[in-house]
Image (cartoon, rainbow, N blue to C red; front, side, top):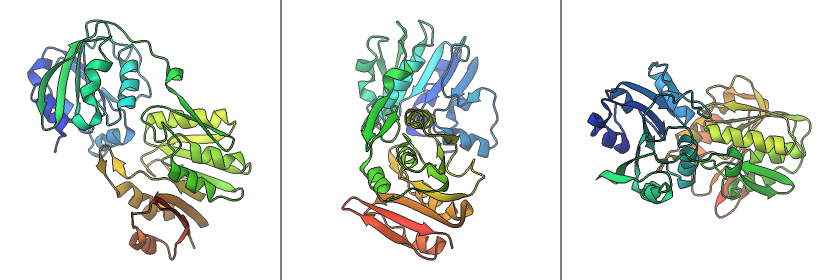
Length: 338
């Protein structure tokens, strides 16, 4: 298996962990930590689809988990934390404030990340709680370490950003799509709905829950299922829907992996990045597999950047498609299962 640059950096310093009880967390994308020899290891995957890869590879370990939030009981007796810095600095701060509120004073902390992710600022951001020193720089990644000298104070409520659009309030946590502001593509997609919708609606990659909250505001006869593979997106969507007094089902799923129903409408502002790299596989899967989850005459409506072209796949999957709205940046597709 090919390991990430960050994991390769960690593996080169495997001797540091031999007599430790090591807790791995953050943007872990592979199973390299299972190769490290130590007294004990526990792995906390922040992203559901990374954990799914382990299931697909039939790797089973009771010390591999994907809890929404950790507790002191879960990390009890672990004296070392290895944290993989994500692509988003705000997300890193959010996760680390939570982690450092739980570990004991004196815990050794290792932080590894790519230069382009903002990991260079880790020593400044965390200066109040630890003194980080760089161990190694290699292939545009940095590995630093230090000892926890003071616990952080973590409050989930303080990390929520609140945005509003047309009487809809949106709640979002760091690392969730739409955290800094409501995405213009999502607004364009929402604006194409001129009247209420009915039946079952599936919101794929729901992020902050904006699309479902907006549609449910004037669609009392529709039931919304919001899915995402990001735990914090689901928490955000739950708070968004509750804030707007909208009933819904919040579902953890890697695209359609945990979906069993059929829907009258599927909506999405699909991602085209996997971490720091472009990845169109998710968009392609949303399109190609949607026919399995749409009712007869059911509709798929999604927005993508105007520069992307998926016409061949659309024609192959559906008999015809329509671009119902287009700007310089985005276009909205509408397709019906017939």
